Structures are given as C-alpha cells and as structure tokens.
Length: 542
Image (tube, rainbow, N blue to C red; front, side):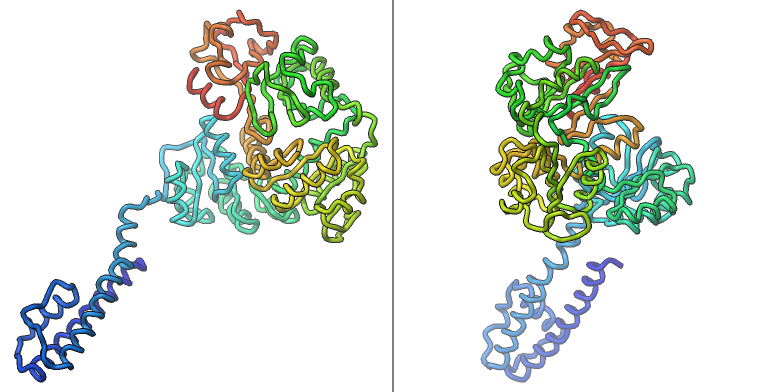
C-alpha cells in the first residue's frame, strides 16, 4: 500500500475514534451541566457540525464553564484535524492523479540505444541521436525522476537497469547499444545483466576511477570511458605551441580533404581583419565553414565579421590548402618563443594532460595545491607569485585543468593579466561556465559533458563527430528533395545555416563545388553546421 493511502487510512480511523469520544463526552456534559438530554445521534451531529464549522446555533449558548471549555477544545480539535490535516493527506492524492505516470516498458522499437540513467553527457548524446533520428530509451530507477524526464521530452522508462526483466522490457535484444552511466559499481552490474540478457549487445560504460576500467571490461563492456581522462586528452590535443604549421586533429571527409578548427593566435596576421579582408578563400582555397567569436559559434560567418585573438575558424579543404592557412593563424612572437606549457591542476585531468604533452616532447610545469606525484610547484594557481614561479610569463600555453569552474574563471583572469599573449586552454565542468571563461580571456574551452557525450556518440555511430565546445557536425545525407537542384538555386546556407562542403558521387568525393553544381540522385551530400541547423537540414530536405 502506498504511503499516502496508509496515512489516510490511519487518519480516517483516528478521526472517527475522536469524534465518537467527543460525542459521548458532549452528551454527558449536556445532561450533567446543562440539563439538556440529547440522543447519541443528536450529539454526533453536533460534533460533526463543530468539527466542520458548519454551525451549532441550536445548542448554544451554554451556561456552564465545563461545557463551554469542552466546546472550545472540540473547536480546536476540529480545525487541527480537518483544515490542517486534510491538505497534507489529499494533496499527495491530487498530485498523483495529475502527475505523469512513467511507462515500465516499450514496444515496437529496434536499432535503438538503451541508456541507463541520465546525466549532462547523456543530454549531449540524446542531441546526437535526435539529429541522426536514432531512437533511444532512458532507463531510470527513480519513478519521480523518470516522470520529470518524460515531462521534459525525454523518452524515459521507469525500471531497475540491473534487472533482466527490465532490460527485456526495453527490447535490449534489438538494441544497437547499451550505455551505462550510473556509478562505477552499478555500471559493471548493468553490463553483467545486459550480457546475460543478450550476449551480443554492445555495452559502453563510464568510470570515474580509471583503475576500475579493467573490471568493466572483465564484466563484458566493449568500450569504457573515463570522463576526466577524455577531457585531459582533449585539452592536450588542443595545445598549440606556435612553432609548427602542421595541421592538428582533423576529420577526414574524403581522400586528402578534411575539416579542422584553427585557433587564431595573438600576433597572427589575420587579427583585426574581417573575413572578407583576410582573403582566406582566395589565398589558400580553403572554405570557412563557421567560426567561434568569443565563444559564440556562427555558421556561416558574415564577411564583415572581424577576426581577433579569440576567434576559432572552422575550415574545410585539402591538406595543401589547410597548411598555409594554419601558417597564417600563427603568431610570430610565439613562433620564436620557448615551447613550454604550464598545467594548473594535477588531478585526473591534469595528469592526463601532462602525460600527453610530455610524450610529444613538450616541456611542462605543473602547479597544484597538493604535493602529489608529478607536481612541480605547490601553491594556489590564482596567486601571481605562484604563476610567475611556474613560468607563465614565458609560457606558450597555460592549461587550466581545475576541478572548480569558479576557480578556473578567476585563474583565467589572473593568467591573462600576467601574460596577455599566452594561449589559455581551460576545462569547464558545467556548460554554463563556457561563456564566462571566454569572457575572462580563455582562448579555448572544453566542457566535460560535451566532450564525453560526443565521444560517446562517435563510438555508437562508429564514425567521426567533431567534438568542439559547441555542437558542430559533419554529416552525410541522401539528397532527398535536393535532387535536380543546383547549389545556388537551393541556397542551402540561407535556408538552413548549413554549408555543403562536398558531394560524394560514385565513390568519389567532389570538393570543388561551383554555384551551378547540380545534385543528382544517388549522391551523398556532406554538410557541416551546428546541431540545430543539421536537424533543420534533415527535416527540410528528407
């Protein structure tokens, strides 16, 4: 029996008992002190009228203080038991009647993703699944939380993810993957249950403690991600030392054709110029797909948009086109500066960054409040003297791998004041902090939830998805209603905000697209743009 039902039952029994006691007391007091003789029914009627405040004029006034005192006590009891207790008892009933009742199973679903529990990184994954029109179901053991998710538009089911019956109820046998994101021990248990239910299902788990990863794999997990290690590796991959013009991480679209992000460094020849004045297309042949201006992503950027040291260009082109463009984004000052990185914070994220950058032959200095293995300088990273001791004045890059977004924002301000030219790469736990970090002076910010969620999506889809601080994707679509249209006639950029960067035809990727290029049946249209624009493209031209 539910708690409110049991509580209501006790209340009703107690109320009846109290009213019967008052009935007998009132009948006795009336006869003893007032000389009025009432039947049990008449006395009960008076008690009910008193409790409900519907009136009792036929019995008043009373001459004895004893009877008046009894009536006063009955008045107070009635107010307490009726008008104060009923809202506590009835409101839960009304809330249950009008609240969302989460389902406990799903039917007619296949090739879906079963997600065990909900988190910010799962929110990123759901965005990806929606873009690719892949069905999913979130298994939530907490009934109220499941109801909240449904009201927020999430496809959720109430059930225990460690139960075989529950996994069967969400059609695990026909799912493309299962994602476990609860806690380290629960995730391992979920994998064991999932493999017992369907040995062939692909299981992906998260671990907070990297040392637990081997146990997840032993339980049967196909992929195990450590969120903090992921963000550490992502931060390390974004280190731009200013001494090389080699293009870093890129997503390959076709043979020798890639899409990549290029940060504009302070001192670059592009700083201060508009997109039109930069002549990027004319000078290199690369196509500017989009750009981040102080944390705000624009696709496509206006030709009048001005480039500064916090701009990040998203460009597509052949390697021979991207390399000279990378050269244009570098700083002459940094090009001759000693290649040195300062890592602030030496937890799981910071230690991963140190491991990666030292493996690439880059010298680094680590700063942390606590003296643990690998920390070079013990101190507060928000204090100027500590940062000076670490060599921030002469560093090429400062990586802020701190656990607190508030401290990271303040540290960014301090570092930027000490060295206006240094490149600042920061970790953010909350996506809400990304904008503040850019405003504080960071050159590049990666949010933990974004990196984890999009890496998860990349694993599920078994293809590259660009994982920047904003959701930007390169996706292949069938031409749909675009068949027979020219690029100029369709005006896809104006209609959807997406950029067609290539067309794959008969196994060949065509990148030199003139305005009169006509899309044919059987082509694959390769477009780039933010998530919401990609969704609009898919809906418009399906």
